[in-house]
Length: 92
Image 1 (spheres, helix red, strand yellow):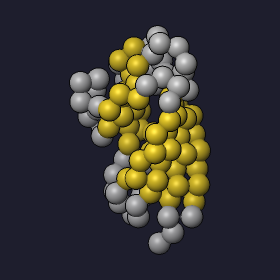
Image 2 (cartoon, one colour):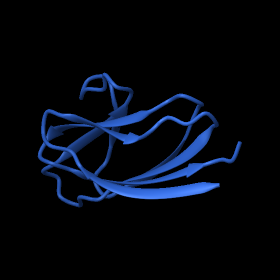
Image 3 (cartoon, helix red, strand yellow):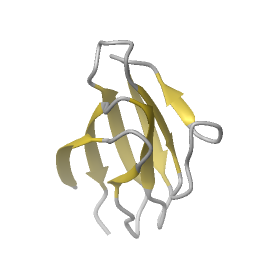
């Protein structure tokens, strides 16, 4: 099982890939590291926006399971939120 961790600053109006695809299912833990209400982050696929994505509330964490081949992106509609990510990839 491979474990990787990273931190991403998502500039306002941009999207960033925060979890890369794998050929096996993988667990991803995401934490929105800003406790200020001046940032807004959304999660989704490569076309995520503030109207299509899942809003992650400032200072909270969530866990997701990605299917084989899926990638996860973050989008900022306000400020530059800091997103912390742990990817837990399963062995083939």
